[in-house]
Image (cartoon, rainbow, N blue to C red; front, side, top):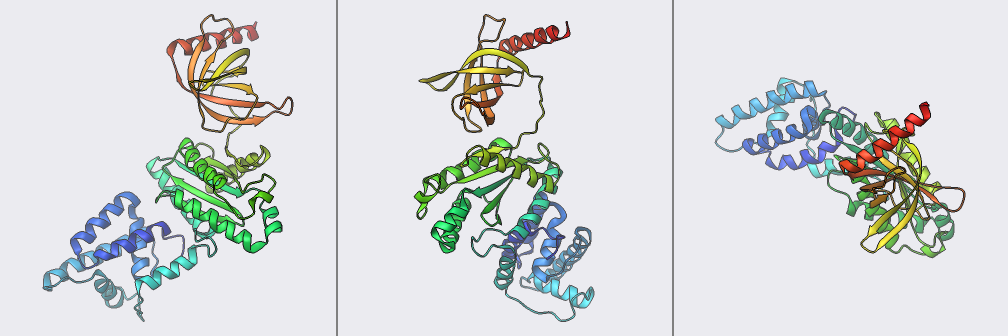
Length: 392
C-alpha cells in the first residue's frame, strides 16, 4: 500500500462495511467520516474493498459513480444489494480496471494489513506505519489548526538489562512495556515501536501540557509495575525516559518534529533518566531581567519552601532550587520583587528543569498561568526600571 491511502482510515472503513447492504446507513456513516477525514475516505474505501489505489480526486469520482449505480440498483431490486457487488461490476464491466477479480474474506485482508503495519514482538504499530501516520496527522493538524504532539520513549539502561538477563527476558520486558503503553493511550493516539527499545507516541489534538500528562502516566506506571530481575538495573528499577515536541510550536515538518523530540529525550537521559523532558527552543517570548530576589513556592497547604530567583519576565520566572521539580507541576508562588513593598502572588507551571554543575542545585523555569493585574504591573515596572538603568 502506498502513501496515497490514509492507513489510519482503514480500521474505520472495515467497520463501515458492516452497513454494506444498507445504502442509507452506509452513506450516512460515509458522510460522517468525510466530515472528519476529508476526501481521504474515498481512496481508503476503494483500497479496502477492491485493493485499488487512486488519488483523492480520482477516487472521489469513482465513488460517486458507484454510489449512483448502487442507488439505481436498489430501485430495481426488491431486496437490499451489497455495495461490493456494484463496485465489482463497475470495475469489471464499466471502468474495466479489474481483469481477473479474486474474492477474499475481509478478515484475511485485515490480517494481511496487520502483518504489514504491526510490530511482531510488541503488537504495536511498526516504524513504517508510524511514518505514514505522522505525515497524515501533520496534514490533518494543519488543515484543522489543531495541536499535535510527538513523544519518544527509550528504556533506560536496556543494554544492561539484556546483558544481565538475556535477550529473551529483554523481549518479554519490551512486550510488557508495550502492553502498558497500549492500555494507557486513547483510541485516536498512534503508539508504535520506533526501533529497538524506543517507542513513539503520536498524540493528535493534544497540546504539550496534555501530552506531558499522558506520557508521565505511562512513565509512572512503568516505574510502579514489577519487571523481571529489575533490581539489577543501575537504578534498581526498570524505567523509561521520554522526550516530546509539538507541531508548529517546536517544529513544522515530520523530520524536524522527530529530531526535536529526540533532543528532548537525550536531555532526559543527561538529567538522570526516568523522566520526561519537553523540547524548549533557546529563545524567549518575554524579555528576562536578572533579579536577585527571594521567593516561596507552595506545593500544598503545608509545604512552603524558599527559592532564589535568578531572573523574571512578564511570562515567567527562573529560580534555583535544591531538588528537581517534574515538568508540568503546578505551583503557587510568592515573590518579593526588588523595589516593591508588595509581594507578587501567582500560579505557575514548570516548563524547564536543568541541573547546575555547582552546589547540586537545579534551575527551574516556570510559566505564569495566573497573575493578577497588580502583580503584572509590579513586574512590568521593575522591568522598565531595569531597562532604563541599562540605557543610562
